[in-house]
Length: 435
Image (cartoon, rainbow, N blue to C red):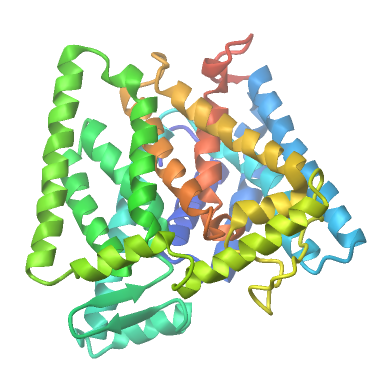
């Protein structure tokens, strides 16, 4: 990102952060040793950077730092409760709930004015690399390179999470990278409509992303995509006020909708996509009697809700296991992540985490209305609202946020909220001051 007038250690930390975010998007759940090395480089470099200790924080920024410490304390308290109750997942889950809030809040100090727009370029490149990876995966499966790339990715991700299913009239595939597209698809959509530069390229990339998601058979995509875009336009109201602006945005929205509809229709005509299979998968979302994945989730729901009834206020502690076990290796892990959160943390803990996420959404929305910021950064904040809303919804039935590789989806937007806290909550100190 922008390297103007930064110390070498801060430049190293920022470059490493870009590399870590890109790897987390393009290669989630693998290359973990490399990612931990990058995380260590970022942390140590930031600690050694003079800017870390010479840049003063506003009272609002200090309050946000204290809030991160509070969430670390919440994780520790419920972790101790889980240990005392002998919960098998208490210790394995501690890093996510007790370490990450304070660690990543410290790393939020990497953000500098102008980075929000520049990070958008990083995300665009990561989205393009992700699409290329998926295309190579499918092409290699069909013999494009003799199956070399396909085999390498299967070995890297394992055959349960990287596979291709081919029938007489359909092709479906799965790759962990698809999860990153749940954030990037609505992000690209909003950027293609509101962005000042690169709208055409973003729209074309969005079409490819939609094609990948249809081939992946992800049922939650349509709902998450729609919700993410709707949330973004609620946040974008200050940006689109005025007859001239609104007309231009509506015309781009209509044009993009027509392009997506035409692209998907051509996919059905040329049998790249299977309409019946897509319809059945969408309708199966509401069928809890036949489809195995839905039956499993219903059993989880029944067991977790029953356990919540036994200890509703403070829950059963971090890493607790209900009467239904989804995985023998990780019996404390459940697909219904928010119900599991209420089970382990109780309604009190659930409410605290919900307040934290709501705060993040509200502040991102408020960034869009701040005239002190450049328009490109206000637009970028709205794009983050789209991706974050979609991903938070998808996380309800798949515990993505329990994995390190998706932590950036929460903490990157939070970094910019922290950066612009003086604009959101004006106090004595200006946006950036140095001793």
